Length: 167
Image: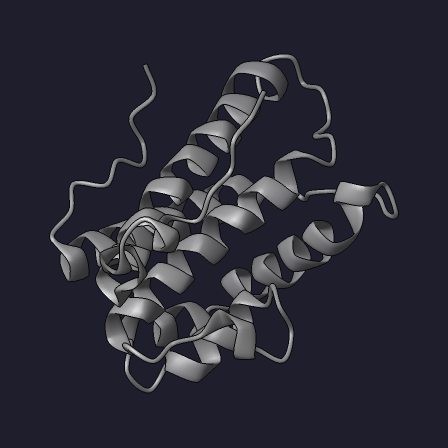
């Protein structure tokens, strides 16, 4: 019914850092759209609380973008060598001496607080092991951070990766 295959098995070109950055960017665009739709069309207008799926999806978007940028600034970047598999803050810390944007994100208390919460939700809420609440600023901070990361990835790759386009 569903066939899954690794792109690297088709061609070695698919394993290049540039191609990895591109495919992470396009995947992040899909995750961003999902969070946008959940936030704007299901919960915001009805005043209903978020369910656990929104926050892990927000985390996944930011993680994919951070990894994509990391592939572009370091050809030897390997996400499997991270101490914590899904730690965006670890990636940002590792490359903040090279990336001005990563340094700016880490300097923002709101951004690091959001990233810490999103990581916890990714590890706990998606399996129903915890609940997640929001003080109302999470979406704005996420949206600004995601757009800044999309813009940086576009700048580094030259790709026209969409982010905010919602049909």
